[in-house]
Image 1: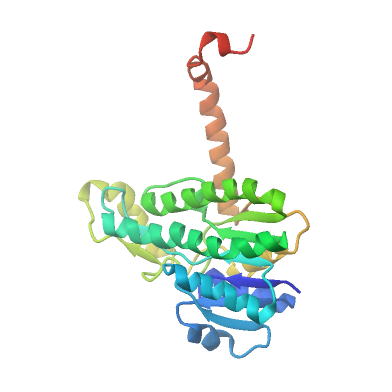
Image 2: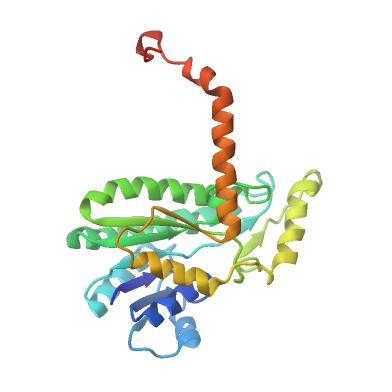
Length: 281
């Protein structure tokens, strides 16, 4: 039996992962701003421990980790899932809107990591699963700031993986595509207050598409959650796991585009070294 701590566990993918882990026979410390939301969704369960956690509060992060250890003795898997999005062009997104999404999606993860890593280091084991996005590998119009937070999370996760691998700790980045959760609703994906007419043909179309797609996303969140449980129990979990046909296709397309562009401009890039430091051809 593995012991999980999942942030943002009261709704969306976090709730589905909670359910899947419980169904697997694991124990879950399910965190949310209001633990009552956890109980309302799942009821009472001997392997479920609802805990209050607002990832914007460093002290709450420390308290949640300590409460989990006191209840179950240790933590095996940490899922950083809490987050939200902002929909709008980069120019349309205010400083306050930008800071709010970064504070949860990036700084919130860092707060929880700082609380959990001493425990993982002491045990020389643990698996950190950071929930990124299809937009964490390639950006798109309308999601500039949201993608920036997820790009930051992926850079953090890759570096963290190198730092903690010698300590027996694994890191996995999960990149969900469009799954049928409530993410596209106004509560999880917040539109910018400002909308500029010049972006009507780019960001404006994305706003319409997101509204039309809400409730019709092709991905099954229950199956996504089962995939996350699978990698948590794997002996050699991946560093990166795109979920959904859309995420896989978009990742492959970006890799091909980057390789093609690099071939075109490689000679110019190589020309910037001092001649004596260039390898002999």
